[in-house]
Image (cartoon, rainbow over all chains, first blue to last red; front, side, top):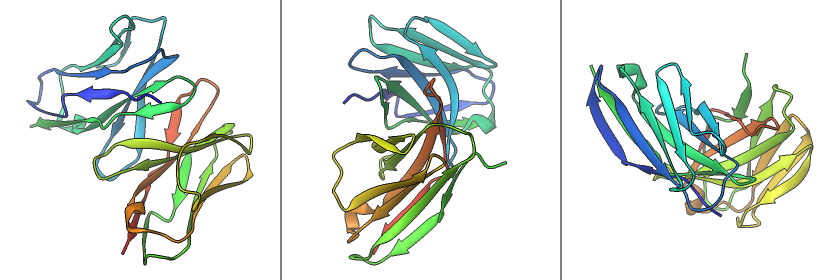
Length: 108
Length: 111
């Protein structure tokens, strides 16, 4: 089995700054997904990028995928305090694997 | 409208007890999952069912038994609970494109 591994484990920034989180994985995938988890709540799906895509945008989110390096990045632009959460990447090679997440804190 | 619901939200019980966690989804998805999230926030898949049939069964103790009475439900029954079973358990469902929708989680504490 494989899992996405997020980096850094924790990130603290000021409101308005950009936040970049990275994810690495080990084997071939069908797609990679990013999720957000607010403290004490369930996971919320953010964005899915397929293995034949290199970049995808959704609102203030930008995801890149480099299958040659087996890595992905999630960029949140113009961060807000409400973006404070844990962010998980998950890879799909027929079943889902999650990493331990990046804890993002956005200070007002 | 609730998409994926789990009950109970919190469960505190003694070692050795048998307990069940229920999961229901109203999204019409064919596939449902159970995940365990440990204290380090790492999520690990336990089971996956597709149309009531087991398709993933990771290496979990056979004290854990999933039961799917129909496509919209996947319940998790745990026998002889142990301290190490304490965790948050997430149920999820997905359509064919594998975009998963998660329930709010059930925090299980074994004393």
